Length: 328
Image (cartoon, rainbow, N blue to C red):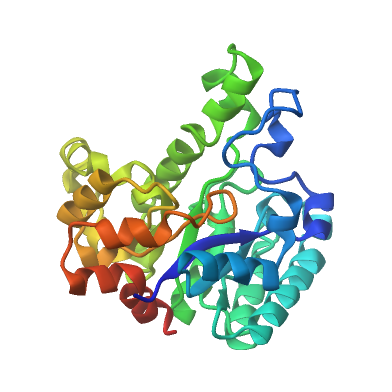
């Protein structure tokens, strides 16, 4: 069974040096104790590898293709973002050219400079061969529905490529209000991997819907990891509490989810979540991801092999839906 994994990351050291580091490393994620080894904390070597080490790990656990994305560019200042993002995209494109049967790429974007970000998306797709973009959370505290980011949304729609809406670190004010007051390690993980990242991303997507982005660009496709970042589990509530008579939108939340959204597991290898999303959204709206190297590849193939779906649906989730959406 061929497996294409869509939320697979690498870290460019130059990007990390200029902005906040990814994951928990910049948030007291080890609780100040370097002897603590926790999940979601890969080694620097795993994060920066775009070659043979990564491919050996893919081979060991049955991953055929990774769609790679650069971490942390949403945290770069406008003064340095454009040049650094161009460099990291060139680096990713070189890795894809070196291993075209194993890697594809999502463009990183300098979202702090939206017009330049739209141009970089176009360059990434038309010149570098990328298959979309991955955007990590807010930029300077603002969601993508802010008018300043419309050039990015418009260009993605024009290019007919998806936006993978990925978790990002909550703003400092949100973290202070919602997640502080506990032990440092508990607060750090509560604000990020355990809950905050996913709540933030679900709210981000709901902003896109309520602001009318998907009415302006009705064919724009959004990818949500972690089984839809909580949103599928509240579709009935959203439609009940925010009906069209209130939102004045063209469609219901359920319709936007089933027509404009794909979900992936992001290493949450839970059969109950797969069954629920297949029932609520349909198998045609599910793709696959591991979230490597924050999550290891060890369970990726076995989870799919054990899934209670038909063989044809298993193939759709494993690779067919991604091939269709990304034209690969």
